[in-house]
Image 1 (cartoon, rainbow, N blue to C red):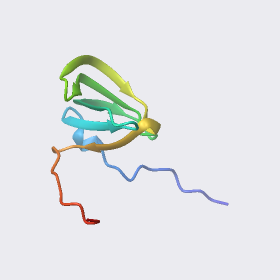
Image 2: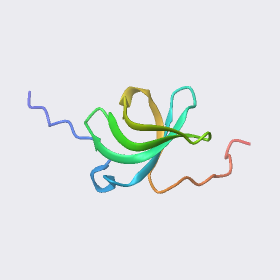
Image 3: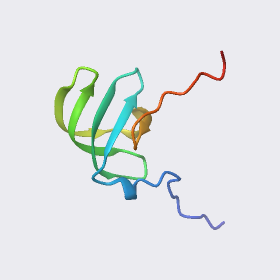
Length: 83
């Protein structure tokens, strides 16, 4: 059986060296500059700050399995469609 190569549906290559915001399972959020990533969405970020406290963390490796969501071009609050 021929298997197609696994490819991420999230195209992060064009966002290298740009600032992103990551929310982890449990609710913790960080903001930093995306340096690198792999197929499991493990991310390497630099100049990382924890939100909302702005505590400086520096260079961080974020495990993809623990990332809940991320925003690349900023975040926009939307109206809850379930209320």
